[in-house]
Length: 238
Image 1 (cartoon, rainbow, N blue to C red):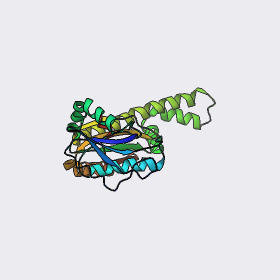
Image 2 (cartoon, rainbow, N blue to C red; image 1 turned 135 degrees about the horizontal axis):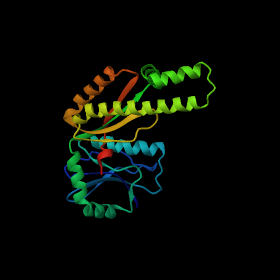
Image 3 (spheres, helix red, strand yellow; image 1 turned 120 degrees about the vertical axis):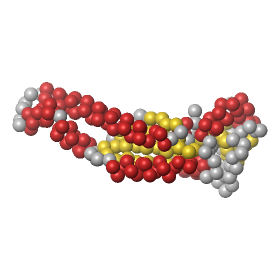
Image 4 (cartoon, rainbow, N blue to C red; image 1 turned 90 degrees about the vertical axis):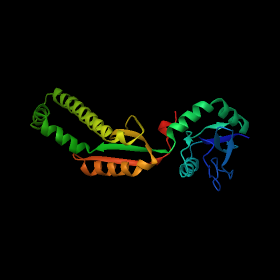
């Protein structure tokens, strides 16, 4: 029977997964497949795994349980293998790689930082501080019919938004990166201008939360800083 693989751990991780049922909508218990050097947390599946809400919740529940007593190497949703022996074979073949990553993330959790800025407040700031943009805006409001003016103003504002948000993102990275063992910057989405992941030793988590709260309180110009964690170290699993 095929097995769904949630995570890989070092052999000293207790893998307390009793009572958890796996993905796939059935009642297959979550269990452990071991080799001398590594452990894999798995459950049996007899159907194609799709990203349904119940299965995403089950996948995350296993990661959360593992994080309670150590740092696993989490696999992305949907990883399956033909059976236990196939899992053991991969653990043996990739033992050096898995162990190196697990040692790197040992004792850590991932924290994600997102930052966004109120767009109306940013626009007002740009018009107040940029005479060229303010001049174009005043011409448009005065009724100018020159079709080039809105295009020029839009380009000017877009350039200013990118410049200011890049500077704000760099300031936040400089402030927060020293609190993590490692960090990685992802592409932001929506109105966010920063999407930062930090690999944080568990003993430093309180310090990071305090720093995040301090940045949020100190932020001006409609900036909002959102800190999420502790999370399994997905961003550092490679």
